[in-house]
Image 1 (tube, helix red, strand yellow):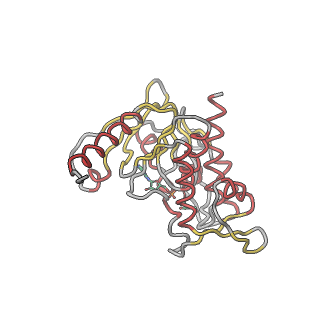
Image 2 (cartoon, helix red, strand yellow; image 1 turned 135 degrees about the vertical axis):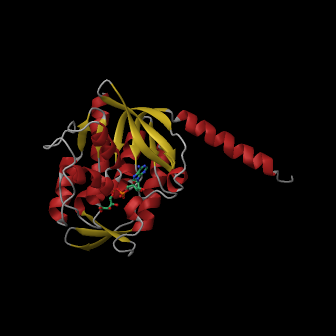
Length: 258
Ligand code: 48F
């Protein structure tokens, strides 16, 4: 049969339209498709919680693709190995409690598992604002990343969600918007973003887990965003903390919903 260009076009438009329409109301909206956001999406979806993830870039995976300084290997500490096993990621023992994995395999394996578990991922969409009703975050304001990049004057659209996870990494983009619109209301010692500190891998990895929590009604931070919001150090290309943080934030939200 001869291929028809209009059928191809119609298929894409119809399928995407239905996906986006289905994502307008969700239980959890994740902002940022780095390691912590993807893992959170995997566990939430696996527990039958309707979860959507918005990623600004064309590719998901955040800072994981490039390992350290574009050497595409990542280091994972022993505590996070059960996650790699569950996600079928190949890893190698390096020494002591250090393990390594291929950064590309890691992104691809986690993403594939998350999608198969039911996570709906939207790439090329940027979150630019939050919806707040009655002192609780209840949605996100989104726009095409291309609109943002081209600085076009185009109004955004809105999605509704019971919980939001800011997993935007160092930039803490969702929390930044919230702090700008509602100064002093963040659940941190200063009521605002404490700011990311210097490199200290050991301390940073431990604190990432502690800092993974609700920072405003319905809004959670995970991954590097958690450390940036709570004034903890950075850790560089060791990824166990990011993966475990994604699991913790999923468990916190699952616990709330029980
Ligand atoms: O930075 P990123 O990988 O976040 P993470 O899960 O992991 C951090 C590590 O990669 C590394 C590290 C620890 O080893 O320090 O940096 O905390 O991924 C964040 C993702 O969020 C996207 C961004 O493009 C990236 O893929 N993002 C950021 N702002 C927005 C966004 C936004 N406003 N809307 C949508 N996506």
